Amino acid sequence: MDSFDDAWEVICSYCKTKITDVAYNTWISRIKPLKLDFESNTAYLVVPNDFHRQTLTRCYIPLLNEAFEAVFDNKFIISFKTPEEVEEYTKAPEIKEEIKDTNYEYTFDTFIVGSSNKFAHAACLAVATNPSHAYNPLFLWGNSGLGKTHLLYAIGNEIKKNDPSKVICYIKGDDFTNELIESLRLAKMSEFRHKYRQADILLVDDVQFIGGKESTQEEFFHTFNALYDAKKQIVLTSDRPPKEIKTLDDRLRSRFEQDLIADIQPPDIETRIAIIKRKAELLEIDLSNEVCEYIASKIKSNIRQLEGTVKKLKAKSLLNHEKPTISSVQEVIADILNNDVPPEVTVERIIDEVARTYGVSADEIRSQKNRSANISNARHVAIYVTRELTTLSMVAIGEEFGNRHYSTIIYTLKKVQDMMEKDRKVKEIIDDTIKNIRDR
Image (cartoon, rainbow, N blue to C red; front, top):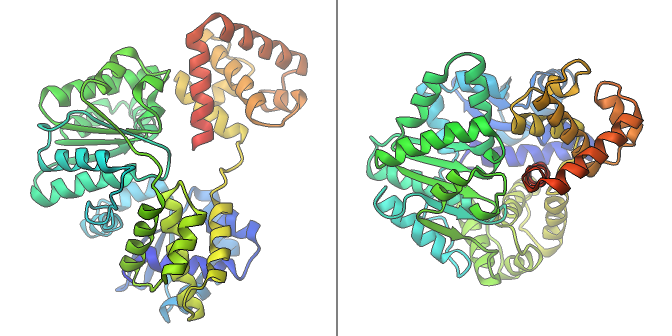
């Protein structure tokens, strides 16, 4: 196996055969591989939070030990890291290199070009060949799983290959918001600004998530201008074109639209088959034409699912020592499609997204005490969105928001509906917030 990512696919497949689907999806599927250190025989894994780590340590270490030994024929010490710890952990140069290598597939050589993405590919290649002189900014948009992130990394990898001195900064839109909030809280805005404004290449994935967030948009506007004026390259991706990000400030929208906008559409069947064969070649797995065509006929609009299917077939063939057949493919595709169902929308997710949009904290939204106008508006919107995206009763919603009486919830819903009818901007903010929550 070429990387820890490949090995982890096999380990996950092993674990899935030993526990229930609920247990697997809740605890094992959310682990991400970080690094294998063969000198210390330690496997570093990333988990969502400390509670997740505690549960894994208490209940699933024996299973993970068994899986690692089955795959590697060797015992490993398992070390869990939270995302916050990873940031500190990756300061070691050798760890940085390991993480960088996980994106080895994201190059122009491994991107399959078809009629649906030919224009976007050409634009990205032009930017990578001649940064800040071809298209600046370049704005890519299309549905999830069509290759926007691949092209974004390919640009960075190509530029780095041609000029290792270039400072390349990759960030997701919602992570930019989270970093900004944390920098404000810790009074470290000068470090925050330096991090982004010293970049030669700024790559921003899912930029739609900064829409509606005033402080974030203000900071991003100045960052954008500073880089553009210094003739630095900016590439942005989104699930929709700038004109359809309704909560985006007009001045940012005009910046995003000032050069090239390229869309990526779902691939045709010939391109899908080529993607499957290329992925199989990279993973060194032999797939018959019949198997490739069957996968392409079943998964039609998501490249990530196509590649995920090939990865799982590789894992099953390693575990079972069998060549993939139509029968084994059917089982894998069912798993892929089931796992791709969006996670249940929770009140916590709703409150977190609304809090980011309005620049307040989740605790302030839940509080009974704070009645400032901005917090009150955020709370009303969160209640409305909760009613829209969950099946909770009025009583249950009231309990989630500081044990408010159900009559208060009814009044709040009516108030928000009236606000949306009278103010187009309010409606756009709420519609974008709902879309962002559903898309996560």
